[in-house]
Amino acid sequence: MMHLTPEQLTVVRQYAALLDTMEEGFAYVVESFHHYERTQGDAVLADLFTALGRIHDVNERLLSRFFAENAAIMAEIRRFSAVADEAWKLDGKLQDANGKQQLVETRLAPAFEAWKASMLTHLRPYVEQ
Image (cartoon, rainbow, N blue to C red; front, top):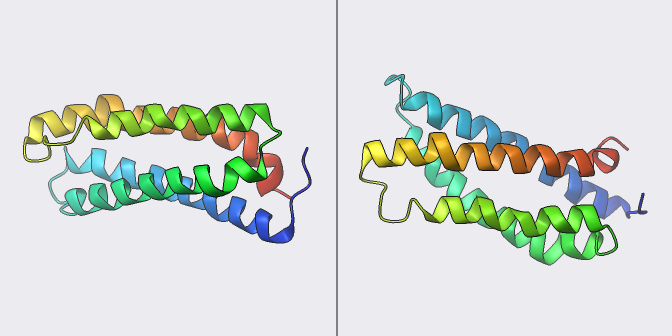
C-alpha cells in the first residue's frame, strides 16, 4: 500500500463519500421513475451529472497523481470513461421520459454502481486508515 499524506487521505475519504452519495442519488432517481411522489428526480439527475464531471476532474488531476504507481487504481480511473460514456447517451434525451428511464435504469446506474464497487475495493485500505 502506498503512503499518502494526511491531506491526500482527506481527499480520498471525501471522494469515497461522494461516490456513496452518488449511489444514493441514482437510487432516488430510479425510484422516482416508479414512485411519483419522488418529485426531485430530474434535479437529482442534474446534480449527478455535475458530480460525474467532478469525479472525472478529481480522477485526472489528483487521484492519477496520488496513485500513479498503483496499477489497479489507475485501471479504475481509466475505466470511469465507460460510466461517462453511458451518461453522454442521455444527451438530447432528457425530455423523453421513457428513453431517460431506460438509459438510467439499465445502463447508467448499473455502470456507475459496478465501477464504484470496484474502485472502492481498491480505495478501502486508504479510506479505513
